[in-house]
Image (cartoon, rainbow, N blue to C red; front, side, top):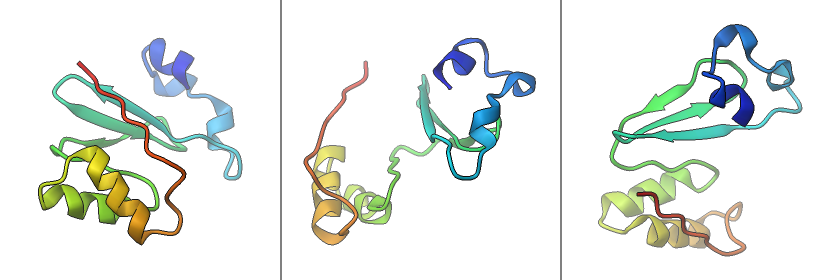
Length: 96
């Protein structure tokens, strides 16, 4: 996916392996703006332009926490408390 996106993400050359219903990888692309694109099993991303974004099993808890004023790291910690599919620590990545 990284190579495909680096080459311009042209739909005609979308990796065939991504179309496998049992073996594909979600790919998150963050562009200036900020614009967030989530690629799944098609060459057409789901585009998010909201100020806050979360994905995964604890998504709803994290979004609620951010809505209530928590930062992203704190929101993930909240999600880990309420969602049994979350946990095992929190890693933080800051983009410039």
